[in-house]
Length: 138
Image (cartoon, rainbow, N blue to C red):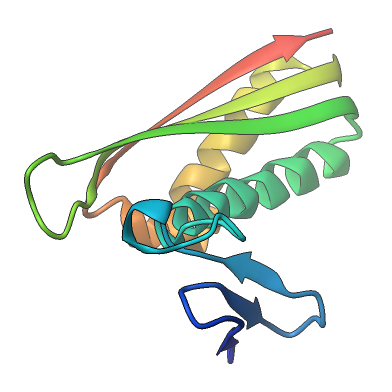
């Protein structure tokens, strides 16, 4: 796997490119000179975790012929204080699903993603407590 990150301005705004041609904008906090032109690196890490697991859960539910009308992932994370680097010490991933989805199948899909399929989760779970929850609306 190869990614490329190019600096866009004379501060911290960068664009990252993977296999696709769509850039991902990245920037630093205005506190250190960023201009809010993109996500922060730690936000990208959370986005990677959420999207990796979302792909798994959606794929599993689709294979089980579950009807998903809406699917959203919200992630809340806390970082250690007064320490550099300020790593995450807690992450909660909440799947918000609407549709004709069996609750037990949703639970199992989340468990499979968490324990077996999501590479990002596999890398992070050794260093931070990750909790997975869900909200199901029919």
